[in-house]
Image (tube, rainbow, N blue to C red; front, side):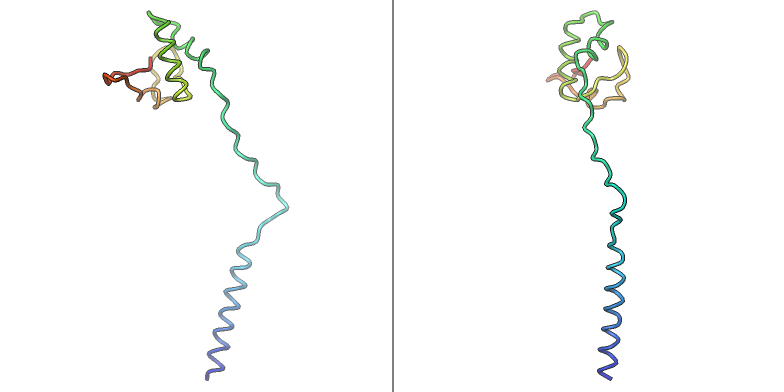
Length: 102
């Protein structure tokens, strides 16, 4: 009786060992996936120049936009609005809780 239990346990253990050893096979015939590339740095000066092109105070607009661009690494498209494209840009505020970014 003890022999049968030991044989059953050994048989189950060998099946589990074979099952898990087959599950860990790695296909080395395919080349590894390329590493993700870092995003291209944004030209904050050019993006802010366009963003502030229709502003009544372009120097102030460019200074604020540049600060926001360097912090958020994005500038919303167009000359105004479109804040959903860059939530960080939209959420930056001054000490008076007004929006910092034009």
